[in-house]
Image (spheres, each protein chain N blue to C red):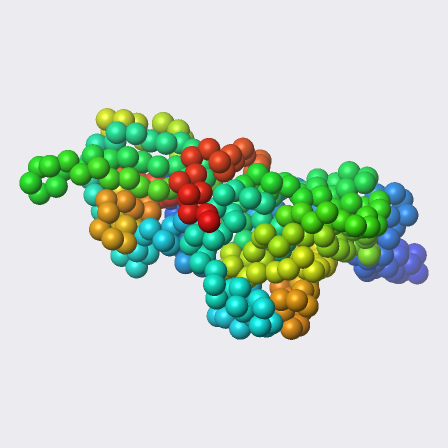
Length: 127
Length: 228
């Protein structure tokens, strides 16, 4: 059975893969290494549902158990809405996994590709 | 009976073969311009006019381009208007086209700017240079021909940072190829910056179920500090 959780991420990923490689977007090339991918798991501390980009802030425990504060940059609110996101898709306290392009200089930041939410749903970002 | 069938068939064929231009002229005679309204999304998104390089720079423009840092100098970082043709080719968000008798108005979702094409006048003399320039338009059959001058030099032609001067002149031929496809054939001339005209074609697809959402670029912009 195809439900919208399957269709929307595929559509969003398609859009991103078509556009993302060519989109000389203002900020993200300066901060993120678009050739690498990183995945982290942690607890959401905030979700900024704003323009020009939404942001997820995540507390991630490193190997030593210390908390590293990660942030992920997403696309614009309108496009995220069309890809199935809402302002409460991610809430403080949620345990999620984020995958994306990491910061160029080792900073705990990423340009988000997708999240896996607490209950297992996958959602891709959108421009 | 057979001759009447042939007659009816001939009439149907003649009606069906009326070109879009003829149909548009008929529409114009009847008072309504061709309909290009709706929510449109860029197709085959490519924000750069020359993805592989090769812009026909004058020495002035080449110097300016080489000195431009696309990561910090982009006027769009501060949510400023995009100008032309960037408004039409470098935005992966939808735009909506409205037609009223005196104007064609386009609203870009990102970053919530608009341009208007004046259908009832010529360019004013002594234009004050603006980000969007002054656009006038007329219908040629089913094609909207839009002519824009009066730009300031603060925008980029595209997402790669191509510069231009206040001499920029943009001519667009916009037509609705079919119900779901809009075509904008764009000619860019700026003798101060480019040794020959630059042409590009942008396709858009109709998004009948989409609305233009609010998009406040200044709300939480973490990149505006990068502007010089």
